[in-house]
Image (cartoon, rainbow, N blue to C red; front, side):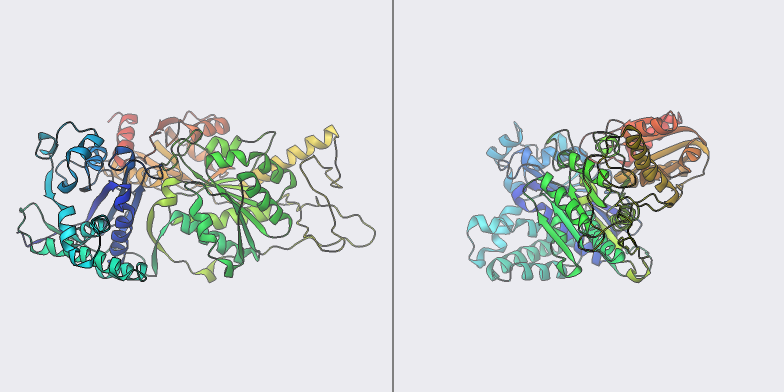
Length: 616
């Protein structure tokens, strides 16, 4: 056995198996150990939409990919360096992604005739020419797991559930990760089932010991990946949904408002409801509604009552919320609407990622109904973006759409905990009753922001009516006057457009402010675009990267900035929606580069598109 430890700058590992094999748990525990070892990382949970697809079929394959290293990690990696395939279906679905020369670890104990047939194999692929381009480790993980836990008193089925821990133990050994965090987690999770806890720990230790003691080929090596040189501070590995929830909670403190979340469970937005439901001590109320319409109406009602209403969903749920969203625009109430985008249309690909709700966010309501739209670019960025959405909502008295997606929601990365005392408050002042005989109007406005003031129910002298029927500009009474409707429509547009004066100017993430090519992105394409542009610039190509957070309105310098480049390339996980909005606003001939597969962009895909644009 080769005893030398090979030092790597980074590595990409993908765990894949049946939905019942615990691949998400395995990946998350490998992530925890990796984070505690000081490496930077990015993860990609990739699981099926079916609650429980037939065991052993390709429909039920669940995978977890992690890219980690001693350098800044911005993507989950184009192709795994190591693929762990727990059954034939996992091999069938994922082998194409493994890089040539990569390491393939296969559980041969699952490669029986029945499982091979379920996966669509006519013959056993192990030992075939299909594996010639890879380093292959064939292990009967199932058998070795049963042997490791045989003294724990578990039945065969329960014992086999520990094989993910055996596999994890082997991977922890291979990449010099510590077992102790995983052991502590297992003992805590199964505190009421000590036999199950002991069995999983035994399997974990057995997989680790196998790596230490087995006489394997020289290709089976141990690797060491160092720590990343990050800014000093306290870091936590967070998913996008966690960071969004914490940002909403922080915004409530900064605004001096209670938060009321009205939500209906939907993939991939449900974790926001789960997270905020644990924050009652922070003044957060969560309401799991019977449907999407009730959820947003509860949020609107909460804002009418003087709290900050928040609602979360995905594309199909946002469609159902559409009429009530128009009500929030008409009543000019602050509501934060979080859209965790997924593959569509209709039910589409519920567990896969996409960016195809941009039209829906910018244009998707009846009537002229503008609202601010902002987008987060990574799990850690969700915290700041959530605060900004809340700030804009209460300052401008408008609903705000915050776009994230399935990849950001479920992916994880290390995030430096912010100094909460350094965050700027935006305390809300509610409307007061007018003096003398003057009639109270709900549409008294701030001259600078055009936001109406915010009357809180129960305050004497501020009684008023608001609703979906058009109101008079001065009195707030129902009005069918044509000129008044024109004025109110123009005002609602002007209020949203005026937000451009209150947001940062658009910066250039990499490169110069003029040049041959600008790659313009938004949302979760940030990582792949950033790495592709970095590689292209290292090759001497004249290319820059611009990433947009504020989509409606755009930053006020964006048009001038974009017109400083000869060509614009817009990679999106849709059929070309930001490209269309840019053309709509600025008559810029932006070229789309689209991917609608439910999977995030690879760095190489964008790098190839850059080279094609520059004819390299």
